[in-house]
Image (tube, rainbow, N blue to C red; front, side, top):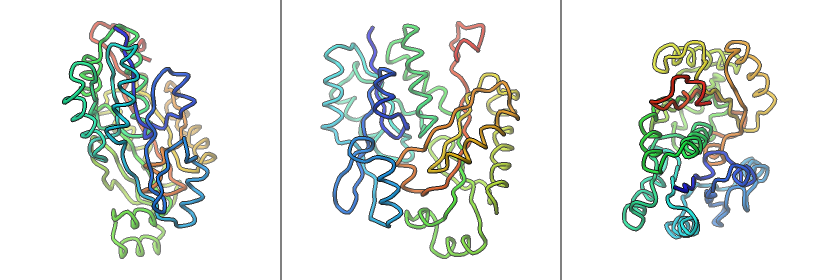
Length: 298
């Protein structure tokens, strides 16, 4: 069967990267001062951070049913099935909206994945879907495998400023004021559908140490891969490329056998945390039952 893979720009996959990969990326809409812009189409990362720094009113939205239907109809002209991988259902209603549309009008043709991923972990789900499709899996099997392995991934993220968490209502103004006064850098965790507080650091150096220790604990326990031989690592950031590169060196010194890449966080995430953030993620590689060598899943 010919399988198409669709995701949204919350994955961090750009339109140029999507063309090379052979996937479709639906741009996420943003409302800025009452006008609609689309990520990586009419809104570049550079423009977004400039607008954010100028304190314009920015809010995130979701693709319309009409947009989804148009993309799916176009792909089904020369594909048998579609695997659609939206951002986590716990962080946006776009997953539920896509699933409802697929169930009502595209049953048996479009399979919407709810594996509660975002950013670089969502990006990895796209790579996993392509890998499974190349091995001959149909869209229903790909959805099943991605959802079965949804908890094989975790993100730890440190924000540089509390301003945007306060603006989005995730912390109170009083907590933001106190945290700013004490120079607190919260470390957050995204595991499954939830974004939760994990720890508090005073410096980015301390935050990096906390995230590294937390990933090691995940590898030792839930992911079952202490040496990081069969787990993808990634460092994500918002306008923090230089520190991300330094962190990558530290991570590879700790886990020399790991693959570890750097990627900017999607604008939807950046909208809520602002510039200067740094994240460390781990995602266990997909392994099919008939494989004897897990490294083949790389």
